[in-house]
Length: 326
Image 1 (cartoon, rainbow, N blue to C red):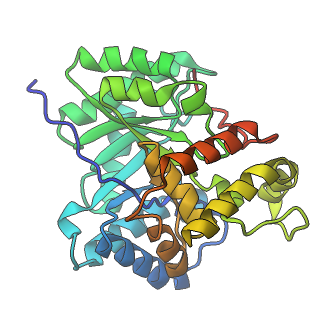
Image 2: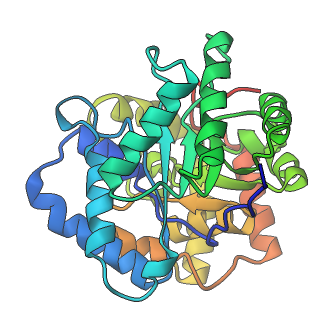
């Protein structure tokens, strides 16, 4: 098979990761227009990478996130339409273990999106609990690339050891890995500082995508130790982590004030300065505008060093994804 050129990705993505959670926990039809406006604003401002997953909007709202994203893409008619890159992640469900099941899943995502997926990613590795399952899934991921169903393939929540194994496996078939998506933020530096994934990805020519760059909202400055808290598990998590983040949030606030930016914009810009593609979620036009304020400028070396130091010295950090491998 003739090897194709690796998929090009823009400098920054505005991801539907948060939309997926919102779709699961309170989506209603009246929000369609608002989300279309978010999509339109992002693309018209040069943000053209949109990331979702086939598990976002499961159950009663089966595949709703992909369906909506496909609709937004079709209805957008402004500048930058030709540059839109739609990425999705295929879940490693227990019943999904053959290579054909991955091909079928990719085709189902394409049907919901109304177009072929540009970048298809393995949502998580099964190496931590069922290594045998992953072989068929990886074969299927390579199959969809060889069959021309996608422009590029990527992985999510893989560490350097497992990533290297997959890279060797794919290289034997002439299939390049375009991206690796991991949880990365000022409150979750583990993939880069401890796993050294950025260096490893640079060596292999893989772009690192940073999901949850605002640590579920902890880095926005909207929450305090006194509350009010988000509902459910997220609120419980915030109660445990926020007291140990005082120095980090203080440093983030100082930099934001000096730059005349918001804490969110500084946190996202920090991810960009680290050479990653952050994919912050946006459920409203206001949130999208806030995210866009992270573009067009850069933190200087001194500011990055201060934020790095504050992140390293934080007493509490964001809990790591249980599927993250080493």
